[in-house]
Length: 204
Image (cartoon, rainbow, N blue to C red; front, side, top):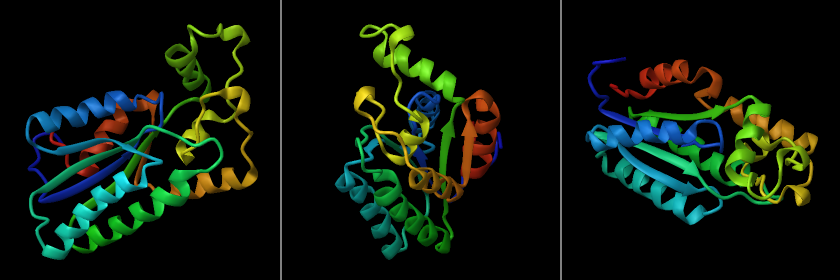
């Protein structure tokens, strides 16, 4: 809500799925960081479990010491993906769900958020950003189910070698999204930001 007081404690984990306006959302968090309203840790690698553990270790330390007052933190989970192993589903999500439960029990807001996009528009954006100088759109073979792949922590690069997703992948993705507090769509970005502001406590 615009003009609302800052929350005493709020942590938001932003699962950045490529080509869904995630960079635009990062800019919003960066602006709040510039104003000293929220801290931002960006580009926490999905495959780099140690990097994520450093963030979580800091939060656990604050929990143990009871010094969460004034903590306002946005963490962007981004970059990298594996060809076959869904790191986000098996590595990242269990840790995020656990720390969310612990932070909320201590009276701190903690939310998991993400954005999805219409598959055709996402594929066109992917081609424009990563492929346009290498292969014309008319002959480019996009990776199957690219949005779901990236959400699970799989890659969409090297499309000819990318295996199709299984029913287990689809079920895993559906179950994963149910664990999130807010999942918006790029085509309704403004509405997503308004809901995000209320949920997280962003004043602008």
